[in-house]
Amino acid sequence: TPDPKLSNDRLLPLNGYIRDIIEDKLGNIWIATHGGGMALLNPATGKFTIYNTRNSSLPNDKILTLHSDHLGNIWAGTFGNGAAMLNSNTNKFTCFSESNGLQNNTVYKIVEDRQGLIWVSSNKNISSIDINSKKINNYGSHNGVQNNNFVGGAGFVLSSGEIFFGGLEGFNYFTPAFLKNYRKYAYIVILIVAAVITPSPDWTSQTIVAVPLIILYEISIFISKRVDKQRIKAEAEWD
Image (cartoon, rainbow, N blue to C red; front, side):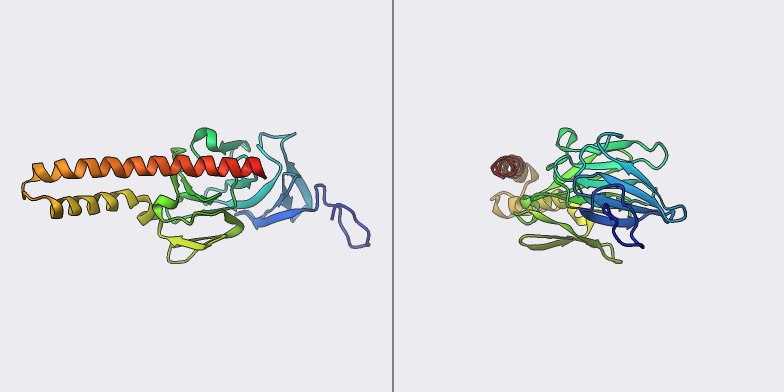
């Protein structure tokens, strides 16, 4: 506690608004706070190591969620500055935010799939992050994701590999492979539709019909992303 009163109380060297607590591969305890950054507790020594915006490159002291990945890196989802990964080797943060591809900067939950890909839930979006390439893919309502905000801490990976994220309109669940290949299935459907509605059976005619449909599909995704982003920004300014 930050305010010890009883004989068995221990001083917590950060604020008492605790958002998340996890254990890493080495048995260390990580604590996320709302406004005080995050802390590493070594159970053997009882020593705390504090990470905040004043003593590190942590982008925001309001931490909503934590995750320890298979490489031992610690991920922090922030309230307004995206996700930050603390490298287990360099002890330095790498940030993923709207400035480098993340769809939204409020990260409610972070999980990891079987291939080591990081998945995060945010406001009306789910994003995947490739640790090695730093590539980010975003998925919104055009991919079947609920058109409302997700909720802090509501997320889980099943033993089967399916990922669940909970929000204000129920929950979404998916297999990472399907969501990553969603566009491929859409293209297949478009080609089938083109084959059905084209009077001539030759590929040239079908391609002429399919190409505009594919272009319209891609435009709809682009517009949907822009509209969602503007709506989220407007809601944030209103709040």
